[in-house]
Length: 359
Figure 1 (tube, rainbow, N blue to C red):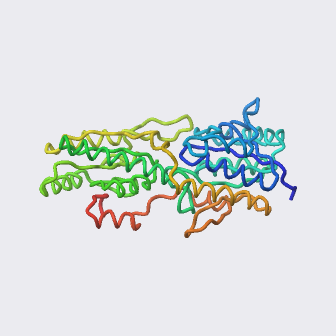
Figure 2: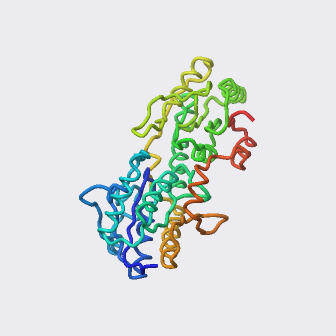
Figure 3: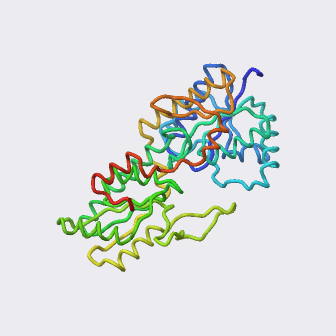
């Protein structure tokens, strides 16, 4: 294997808290190997567009700035997907850009979609890579946790804490719609932490009458407010998505399930007024929690270790309470990791009285 002298790093997909801590860790660990690091701007666009968009990163880039403690991505990111028919052309541009910069290997910080797309770019372009998982959805295969998930959960839990106070003041059932795409991890974790009464996730069917029964039981017990969490990927009771909109590569654009639930509950049950809060991109922000900073640092250090040992086409993971790594092809083959309806999270929610769909 060619000796590594220069690597690139890029952040791809939706941003989240902890990305800058990953970049810092990679730069610092690479510095210990006497490697140069080029930060690629705006995900893969930095290598596929002309002129190339990049920045040389050094330890000084992060030693006297607040960036490692901030959310967002210092390098910028890209979250638009790619059409299959564009793959060959873009991978060619990608490879040409990497060779122009003299990059020997690439560290890719992304979620399940990014791992699939960028690993294909690297494979077709003949570029060595190591992946680091990040996502607020926590749906990246194999890893038990991804950078950014813990902080997103805290943002949602804080929102529920605030909503509980206004719900109590106005005797309302307040609905919080959170992100997550087709996976219910963020909704379920947030609902448990925020002590919600109802949590709806894409993986478990539900009935609006059952939600109403839960609200009736709350009312009967003497409480005049309730909290409902719903994941954006949840469908209507008839199984259809609320939104028919799609993005430029044909993926469904989620959103609106909170308003649908509010309308249905207001129509069928008059004892609680409902209001909806769609948390949106606030979930991608928030000061990175300690666990996300720690995970980011361990992932970054492991990525550099793997490259120094000549191990490429790998993704770093947090598995069984330790750092490990898996072949990217195995990760991609696994696909999106959904919430297990029989998981301990779901069991605990049900055991403590939360309605989480039909058993």
